[in-house]
Image (cartoon, rainbow, N blue to C red):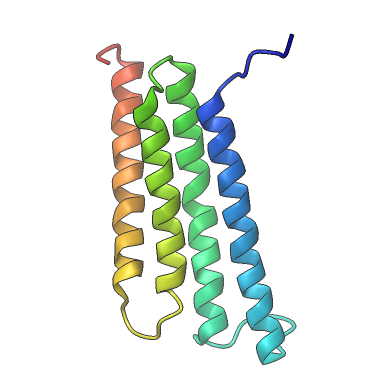
Length: 134
């Protein structure tokens, strides 16, 4: 008999997040090869933008995954939680693609908005759960 899957939303979200992290790293590596930049960045050029997209992802995604895990552990992680993390990860891909542009791009703005709304929304839900109101 297979073991019961514990925290399926969190496990799936972490797997998808890892794949996106690899994609972001590969994009930086490709840019390094294309411009023959071994160390550092290109002073605000395309490599710097890709590095910032990668770092921004790394800055925000752990908080989202921790909140998802906490909410799921509380037993409140129904289907809506899968939808939220799916939208969040799509938003992060949009942000990275939008960062390739030298001028403000709608995909970057959408990614930023989705990230902020996800963090705030999950934080509110987690606070309500912790206080016994949800």
